[in-house]
Length: 304
Image (cartoon, rainbow, N blue to C red; front, side):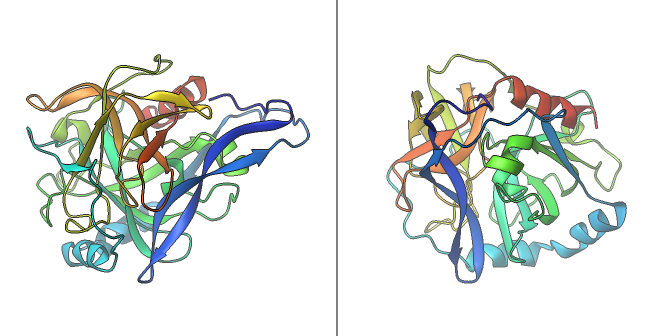
């Protein structure tokens, strides 16, 4: 979406906030009005990159045991799963998984993320608020790992440590453009991510419309993050983003929006990620319209 402010008011936007439940903070966003400030010169680099050292990545893999992954889900309950979110039924999605991390408050938590086609075979798409707190450059997540195909405690394709995380700089400074692209290490057998699980196609500057499937691992009952859920809807433009009817909740943040999705092949084209909800009992899911800046973020990740 555009990075410059419009006169009088910027768009009504979803700003990421924390939803604290049982000591754990899950990524959740609700719409707020952002008023325009003085015009500022655009930064030289529209992409901000957070890097993790080899020591930090090794520590992340050691930290996120299977027992810890299951425990974090049991510690959170956002109420019953809403009527528009259904368990995913189809070819198992090797490319979609849980993204575990310690957030800026020091709490264990998770988002959802997706392996996509990339030059380095190592790029993963998610939401920016899973990586760092909006409008707060120094409040970042740590001990971040991606578990593709996660299902009820099973990790059929292993665990991949996140090496770097790229976000739009306007997210870091102004809580705008809530998307991120991660670069992950090879696995313990030195295999690159998409050599193991494949990668979904990704599209930029795509017109809003058609039918999309939004997926994620929300912390609602009875799944509590252990099972992949899905909403299907026709996106419409709203407040500078796109929106579909959906009742996925915290924990589904960063999950993919697939256009042209087939449950038979498990393939589609990623056109957005779960970003913001309309309330704590959601009926709508917002996602960014992936434009030029989003493509630069993705390019940074696929070339890392």
